[in-house]
Image 1 (cartoon, helix red, strand yellow):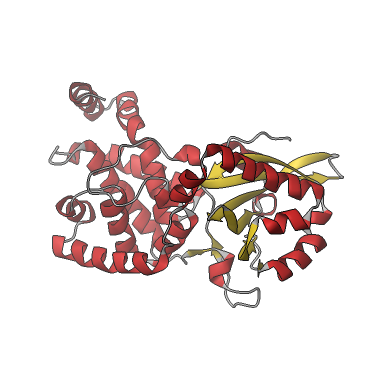
Image 2 (cartoon, rainbow, N blue to C red):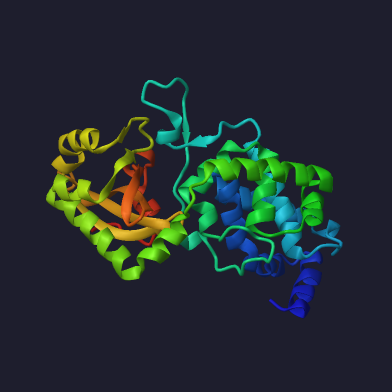
Length: 335
């Protein structure tokens, strides 16, 4: 949107034109939603945060004086809305990081994010991470480990590339506090993140090899072929299934579990992308429906062309409307 159009819409919105306001913020909606997902680790919470943030923006539009860009002002409102939601909540986990099934507590699980949520926003000069890299499962788990202020600062500075002075204004704190939080957050990122991102792994494989890997994975599951499936996994591969706390590591444990449970079922599959990673939508045959129904989103973490982790989000158990969840990943209701 050019400056003159934005100025015209802003004037109309200040005069109470809701349609003008809707058009004004529409260009920013996708990136604000992705930002709130990074902050909250939940698709539904991110949707709620964006709606609340835009409502706050509409009610406080008269207070926007133009000292920053409209985009920066909206990010300030969205970030503080997300921070209000984060405070007092448990951090979102994945089973491999949470512990075995006997671990105490009632975990709140990280939710998968469809790649369609990631708008093609040009990378800012100061950004350290790619847009898709910053929603990879490892990155999201790392963000959840950070205290709220550090999380917000790392995303605003190193993902979105806002200058420190602008971030201090967005968060209502000092530049010194921003720089201190960023230093601590970067230290956590250095020790928590893998040396190679999934974006680098996917680029190294290339589109054809990635497609073949996904097809071979799906074929092995549908054929109940444990040998082929295990040959695609690294020796210490993990397989987790949120919302279940149980998870498995290594070929011996995985073989026993695969033969006992998933490979004894009938499946069909469709390839997709989630959290910037290769993913597979899994449709389970249900005799009561006499059909294959949307059941699991398998997000695959790759290392040197092999699968190092399968995070199987069992949406068929975690939601009352798995078909709508599959639709957000561009997957059909039936397979």
